[in-house]
Image 1: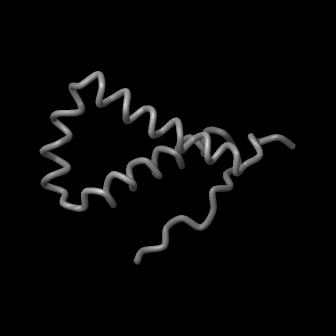
Image 2: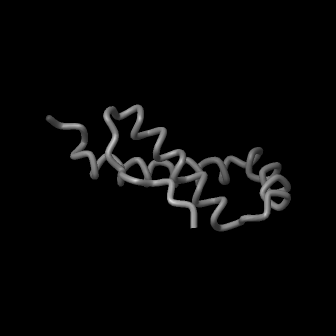
Length: 75
C-alpha cells in the first residue's frame, strides 16, 4: 500500500483546503480504481447539479476534518 498521507496538519487554511480536495479525490480513486470507469462516470456527474453538489459536500466534510486537526489554525 502506498503511504501518502503523513499528517493532516497544514500551515495554512489554503493548504488545508487543498488537502481536503486531495482526500476527496483519493477517496474516489480508492472506491473506483478502474480509470476507464472513472472517465466514463465523470461525464455524468460533471454535468449534474446533484453530482457536483455531492462532490462539494465531500470536500467540505474533508475540510472540516482537516480544520479540526489544525485547531482551526488558531495560534
